[in-house]
Image 1 (cartoon, rainbow, N blue to C red):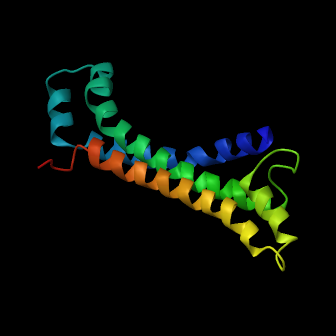
Image 2 (cartoon, rainbow, N blue to C red):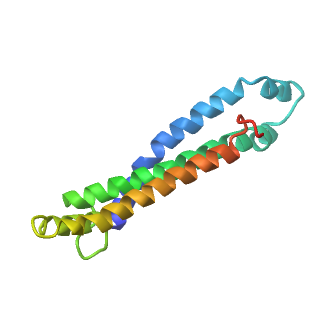
Image 3 (cartoon, helix red, strand yellow):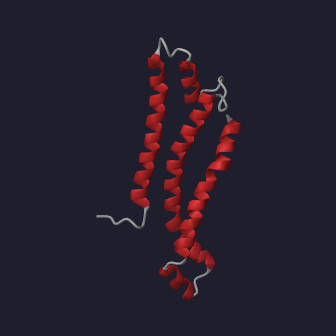
Length: 141
């Protein structure tokens, strides 16, 4: 299980980095950033006063949504037999075991499938709620 987590972590940060980089590049051209630079703000002050407060919420939201995707990926890989191996617990392994009883016990698919769906839905809803709460561009009424 550790190798799978390392591989998913090594490959899972690339879209997040692309998103944060794009957000930082767009922030760099904003009027308030140009005004702060013209007034002589140091790069460290720009980083902690403008970049971090505007980029961090986007990164947190994306990572919370990406966690659901990684759970689906781990479950799919374990179901196919290339993820977590059977002595370790995984929802994908539970689905694999239920597959051998498909004809007599179709109800065995329900608990792990429902757990995967509810967990992924919760991560997506948390990400959506965090976006609404943390995004500086949304207006609060």
